[in-house]
Image (cartoon, rainbow, N blue to C red; front, side, top):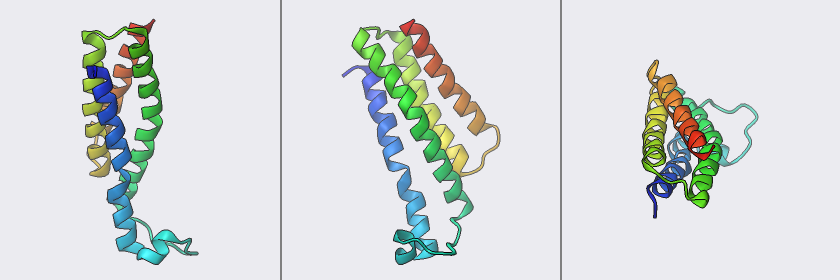
Length: 128
């Protein structure tokens, strides 16, 4: 498997697992019945869990773009050191993004998001 596909797999796995901590918080805060139901006046998630949920949504939105770009690179045979490095940096940028978003670390979240965007742009430039 190529480096690009390896990091696509890791990004997908990360994104697929991000729901677990904030759902556990939801169960702890609301109880199991309200967590799986539709309470009329639900208790809010802990602040960190609400931020993690928002970060998860952002990860899902960006996974779509990243995955399409990696699959285009792969299918067109455009793999090279730049695409491999872009995919590796993208993965670690997503890790930094979710951690900094969850723990409300100023500037890091924005810088991590920007790094991920520039990795996507690097893939686009290799494709074009």
